[in-house]
Length: 526
Image (cartoon, rainbow, N blue to C red; front, side):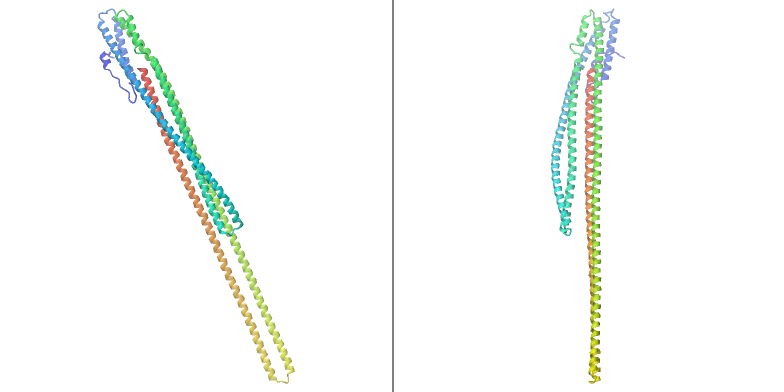
């Protein structure tokens, strides 16, 4: 390797590292190694030619020139390093202040959200209590109307009023369930806001601790680094002043400079290694805590998601079971009422038919009895008249047979006339009885048809009402399922945003720790 000249040292430049403040450590170490080799070579030449002081005059002069240039270069590098250190400290302070201000803003926003969530929680709780009171009042009205309907089941107004109050009670119950769900959601949001507030406070505390540790490390580095005015250069000057000749002075200065350089490099490497290990341990600790918190947050979010799904499924199943049970109860009541109505109609029809048959038989029997009485009366009258005529004929034999024959003929005609009148009257009564039976049969058939139509209409109305209620319950369940799905999507979006913010913060923290490590390493190498 070629030796360096003062011109090489003066014109040498170091490349700055991207995304970091300071020079490349490896490049500075390589340049210092070249300077060390140059100084060692010059020292060897000075020792080898110590017998010829006059011959080494130019070399010693050149060495002194190189030492002076090297001292100036070191002083310039130390000034630049100090300037970079001040700029880095100011930048770190500004970055820390910006992060603290941002954390305070986030904390204030979280506190505002927390207060808003608490107000919403109190409002929902008040509305829930009001709805509970209304539901209890409507339940009491339903019980009262149910008792009245049980006492007087033939009043349609009570049944309609009972159905309306029951519908209102079910609506209030549904509203109460929705408010309870919103109250639970608001409570969960309040808890999450409190957790975020605690996390922000913890991160702010960690940021302050990191800033304090950085200040402590800088103080330690400042204590370890020797003073440029009273440290190495003074020792080198004192070593040169103790020598008697120029070569001895150059040799002593070179030897002491090499010893001080080795000590400074060893101390810097040891301190840099210790700071690097400490920073790495802190970084691994922070990464572990962040991973644990991320895993715990994901587990809690998954558990909450699973619990919300289970509660929603249980509520949906319970509501569907209630709706099915209510539908079955309504169907059973309708079937029982229809069966009861049909049974009563059949009993009434059978009773009416029996009474009509009994009345018809009685009417027929009365008509037959009347006809028989009339026949008997006619026969008795004819017999009486015949006897009277015979008696009269016997007593009036002498009056004339012609007159007796005329009277007999009149009696026969009179008897025939009475017999015809009796037959006509009996036939008329029979026709009236048959017509009455036919009319009663027609009335009973018409009443039976009307009863059947009313039962079918009531059955159809009851089934339609049950289907409408089942449809309404199904619609409400679908709406609540959509609301629950929307809440789940909101939770997933919140989890995604929170993970993104946590990842961004960890990335910034990692970059800050890396910048601090690089800065400390640069200070140790310089």
